[in-house]
Amino acid sequence: MTILSEQILKQVDKPARYIGGEMNTYEKDLSSIDVRFAFAFPDVYEVAMSHLGMQILYHFLNRREDTYCERVFSPWIDMEKIMREKNIPLFSLETHTPLKEFDFLGFTLQYEMSYTNILNMMDLSGIPLLSKDRTEEDPIIVAGGPCAYNPEPLAPFIDFFYIGEGEFAYDEILDLYKAYKKEGRTRAEFLEALLDIEGMYVPSFYEEIYKEDGTILEKRPLHPKAKTKIRKVIMTDMDEVYYPTTQVIPWIQAVHDRVTLEMFRGCLRGCRFCQAGMIYRPVREKSKDVLINYAEKLLASTGYEEISLASLSTSDYKDLEPFANELLELCEKECVNISLPSLRIDAFSVDLMQKVQEVRKSSLTFAPEAGTQRMRDVINKNITEEEILRGCNLAFNGGWNRVKLYFMLGLPGEMQEDVEGIAALAENIVHEYYQIDKSKRQGGVQLVVSTSCFVPKAFTPFQWEPQDTCESFIEKHMMLKHAIKSRQIKYNHHDAKTSVLEAVIARGDRRVANLILEAYKLGATFDSWSEHFDEEKWAKASEISGVDYAFYANRRRDYDEVLPWDHIDIGVTKNFLIRESKKAHEAVTTPQCRVKCSGCGANTFNKGVCYEN
Image (cartoon, rainbow, N blue to C red; front, side, top):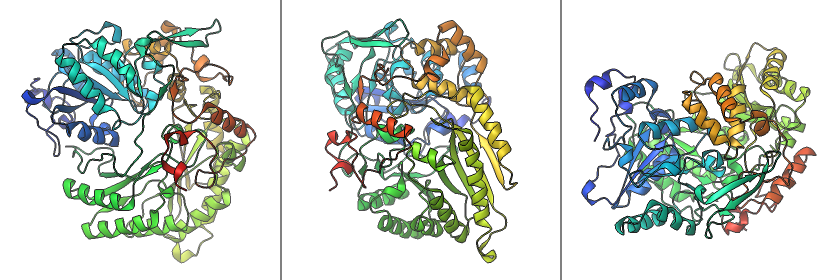
């Protein structure tokens, strides 16, 4: 056990990040535990504690009497400095046990810019960074989450990847490990046995072979049991799937400090840039009564004064109106606020927001993603400017005067008029505000336009598209800034340099692991934090590793090119993605799943929206 002295805690910012013992955590008798699992989120405490997946898996694994799941997060810069000076190994929050003493160390991969933190956490634990260098004395390193769907940039560092939803196979994995541990079997034998479990990818049993032009020739299995396709695993009955009736309450305010209610998984919409909308298909909903039951239990067990609804597109929940009315009734009774995600702006949504925010109207959030109709058709947003203005009009009449609009720059096929179209749409929304009755206006209107940079992601129809260069993004930022004339519109934009690097990693093969390793050796950590991102370290790492950004980020791929993630099967077929890619080039839209099935392939899971009728 690592003893953290009061003297050390007094020297660091937010010492509560490191002490553990929060309400609704677990204390277990270690003498009765067979499997110790450290759940690692490679970012700081208050970010990690906002993550729903962590809350679910933490309670899911701890429901087993033979398993103790403890949490570990990236120590902040000040704490890391002290730990290195005093040779304090990275430890778990629950028992302050060094990570090297655990059976498993499991990382959730939520965003590519956290990858150097993964290496830093292993290094702080005294665990060899490369899986080939680990011995029986080291924990088995597993990684899952959305970024695991292209596992290759982390393949040399991770012992196995879990592709799919955690509730499906972890019991089988832990039972297998427990048996192997009892029999004194080796880690190599255990990893070999994982080849029989659906959804598990063990990188050491595969190699990448490259062509002379640098593209992939093939991914070659090195073991007779190594599958050529790793099929994701999903839960089919969302009413029966495990969901915690409590949440760990952080000592300090987390980014999202409230009860989180997961309504459904998947998305009907099919936006062509959106990875989550493809990898989480098909849509599987929880029934209204199950959701209300969880809401009651979670509020009772946490004491939170706010509840948020989690899904990719809350407006698409089948029973939204009766569910929302019942939840409103419960929350009024308990004096609890409801935090609504970005909704489609229609009459019911505005009415719902009206009820939720009767006292204090916060800003209205809306994501048109593109400024012109042509670009909205290219990305399959399936919304018109008329619908956007009508929705804003409804909201303005309902008492809102602050609107946040999210757009993407650098989308495939984007032209100057599409960039300027963002400014024109924003100006039209301001104009719309002044068309409503003066008596309903709440002072002047405030509009915030935010743009992110398009990053092509695996398993999307845009996975073959080139990304804009950093210079092009900066030009477009300036173009849009000059196109916005109204003083009531504020413009924010995401950093282009990190977006380009994100694309390099998101579409990377195994050679990109060398870039990540070299950047880490040069001191890169917390790269998703703008104040810590050091472009020069990554440029130097690119030079040392020989990884050319343009090859991964700015190059258009052919449909017949072998992609680094082609061995992963998400259900959605490559043929469907190619069809969608071609429709994008023609600016032709595809209806959402409940309007018409487009044959994406997700019906292979025999459940969800594909089988509603």
